[in-house]
Image 1 (cartoon, helix red, strand yellow):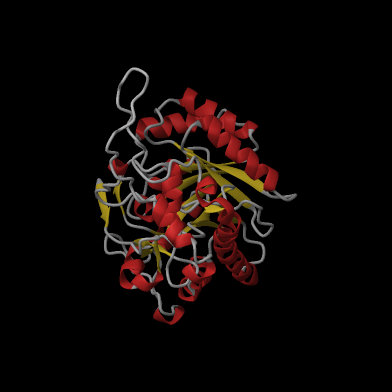
Image 2 (image 1 turned 90 degrees about the horizontal axis):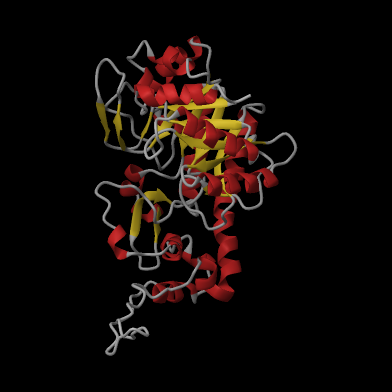
Length: 393
């Protein structure tokens, strides 16, 4: 299956959008129904060119009776029922419409409810990251998918951020790169010590993480190499190659806690989905990395209740293909692997390059191709994407 990702505002108010998307040669549109804040180009829309999406929103009418403590916001930049308008237009063009649902990534709800967000070992809150260790967060996600199935009536569900969010986040004027934290540091900064998570860990974990993330003081006599040049010590307290090495004997226990957070949320939602719509296809954005925290949730042992496991393919194509192969190994009979393919910068607007990437992912086991993004890509990129898709058999 070929799936083009699109926002409601790309379609609502643009009569030409459905046919333009269908002309790519896709079978379905993954239409955002619950999405985080962003600033988006709209290169085709007759009414605007740039949209400032100032807060996370639900693109369905918000019915107060459907919600508990956490209530999603309505958009102000597009009609409250923009999803329904866009859905109908896309279906009229012959496309299936899958509800692209972002779950725990919600800066508005995190800002309103700071007791429910991820906090690192120093107590710093990540307001964009609702922590699924809290019952209120699980309840919100459960109600969200139930409301989408009831009101949106999609042809399928695409679940993103179905687990803990972590340190990595593209926020407004991000200013974290200069700390030179390693990948192991970022994983350590993604461990949550909120009131619901902290009691699940060994008591020695927090001081251990804090120690690894505390810079070493300058040495009075810096070491030199054989040529006499000063050797600069690592910028942080953890020269470890991985979080596993940093945590040492605690790694197994902590890893099990982290994986259980994603698994618990995922299984609760799939149970709710199957109770309402037993045959609807469920697509998960996942990674086999057990330490993952973000849009692609940790799935190191598979999920029999899902239909499609989609892996991120925005980096080095060979590394991404290896990730897809690991997801293919986790699949049960009848499950499929999808590649989340980037058609935006830094990828070139080149059909040959994109076709080579698609072929690489197909050889790794991908049968589904999730294409990002049919609304953000300019004309040359859409043409290149359509030509590349034509090479698939």
